[in-house]
Length: 248
Ligand code: ADP
Ligand code: MG
Image (cartoon, rainbow, N blue to C red):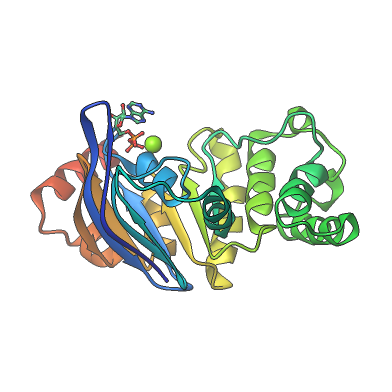
């Protein structure tokens, strides 16, 4: 269970998140849609504490963090919270000097202090899971974008996070590589991984989402089932956005 209350973030006078309230149940998949600049990436980065929110609360499992401009969260808590919220980036962000296997081992060894042996075994089984067991010793530049992104997903999974956050995981990919990545994410959904996914893939959103969240200009405009938000929305702003996306 992840619960967000009154989350605010500004950058130098620009209010980017204007009080976000959201709840995502354990084992469910939430998909966030919305126009460019609406604050989707900032919200994910706040959930992962890559950005510090200015106000509000985030509860993840039994850990609750409250934010204000005057309180500083201790570094240990930040690290702990960060590895519970795995992040999958638009541009994969793999370490270029590490192999696929080493990319998936790194956080386990450094952050979780797992033994090399255990980390390696876990990494290999995750590589198997994302269909890349035979690419273990390749470096990122030797892999396609789709393969790099599947390594990115395996790397996030390796930390046994409580939730995985995906920021437009397929938007940098050539169209023919999108399917394999979406398939991996769909399998995670079936296995009951808790996920928050920002995407412009509307068919995928319909298939995989338990809950769809439409954001615009730093607020949550509408949340509901895929049917409610993507098919039968009564909201003018949601409808305007959907018409634009479908026209492309
Ligand atoms: P989205 O992911 O929905 O496209 P973002 O969260 O990336 O939106 O950005 C929301 C707004 O915040 C944009 O106006 C963007 O320019 C601004 N913004 C994002 N990150 C920063 C930053 N580090 N510094 C200043 N402005 C930022
Ligand atoms: Mg973004």
